[in-house]
Length: 401
Image 1 (cartoon, rainbow, N blue to C red):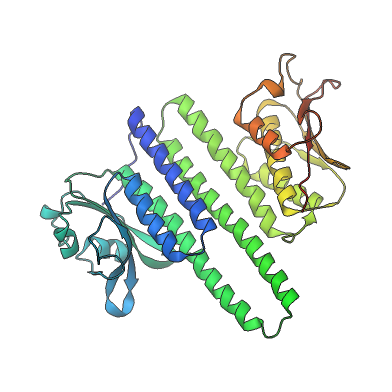
Image 2 (cartoon, rainbow, N blue to C red):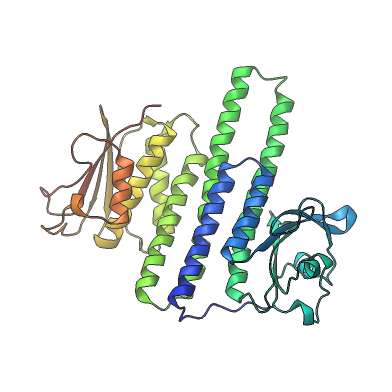
């Protein structure tokens, strides 16, 4: 069934539901990142699908090629004995089979009179009258189908399909990540006989470090895509501005994590190399950068991964603010001090108004900077009014490794 965009004039209740669905997808991404148990990830996907569409029934159907059927691998709402045991046909005459074989989402709001498909006996036994089925892909391979069901006719809308497909895409990334971990774990086991215990532990630590940040980046990119889709459906300028700001922040934070797993080790990396690459990413990713120069003034020194992440997030917020509200070139200077780091971001604009007090502001950006700066001596964020242009100084405490 072809998908249509959500109407631009969403009601407050509908907009709240869509935002709640995005929160659920983001929360599921975090859960999948922190969980090594594939079954737990599948179970959580079923729970989130039912919760996001406010229905009792949902399930993950895994394809069993040798049996030409689906296994109900996880689910909520079904009678005892269904999950983990029941089989469902995967031919194109069933809604799930059609979604699996064509890759197209299937929305059926009246299964009893649906001319395209037969109603699977499992659905009939539970009185199901409406269903959505979407494909779960793992790096180009079809794993199965994510399905939500309802005993009410006409229960679902096209916008619900978009939510379910986004959730299925996130689940596909999580499944593939788990499969990669399984392969890597097997490779590590094969090498254990040849590697000394210390070398093996270092390799495993480095692998986990990169995989964690890779998963975070993938999840954040999926959230950014969902926010970008939502932005196209909004007419309210205030809502558009808020969603656009959130999308830009998610994209910038993804760049922070991508740089962490692309270089360095789980213990430490060169801060100057990291910051140089991060500023290059920001110049290319942020739509409002407009080709403005982002300069860096710092010497090479080593920082732990945690401290690098905090430094990167502070720099992202300060540079983003300078790009939006300042003028001309932007210079970032980072200096290592005995008690931490001194981070200075300057632009060529007229500076901050006399009434501006960063300590009195309650914006999300300054809250992020303050949280990342940690318990530094004195004010963590300050405006340097000794220069005729915009300059912000942040003192960041270093976490001990």
